[in-house]
Image (tube, rainbow, N blue to C red; front, side, top):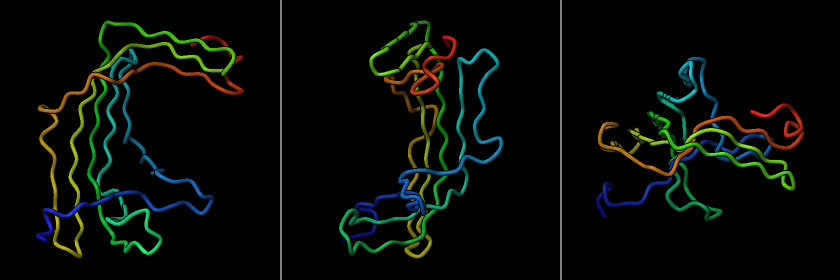
Length: 141
């Protein structure tokens, strides 16, 4: 099967403490507008693993890199959730999310690129302030 037709699964390595799907965001990698209504995440050359047969225990892993940009922009529709039983509170807005990604597996000579950021649009995001757990009792966001 041609490499472009194979399934790829890109993920950060499992941390020594067992956390999975966690990546460090470098300084300046996340910017939030002063009014809190727009946020941009940019990760360049993020070291990940390409493991197409995951979660098979013997799944081969190859070093890979991702370039990812995600932009969340608030709409004018407010969202407020307050659930004392589960110690969860959120106050913000529904948002439009846009994403762009480039993946590279150097050992295979494989590169994939999504469509450009301007063509991406998902309307299932929220942006705002959250309080949960021990922070739930603090002042309202």
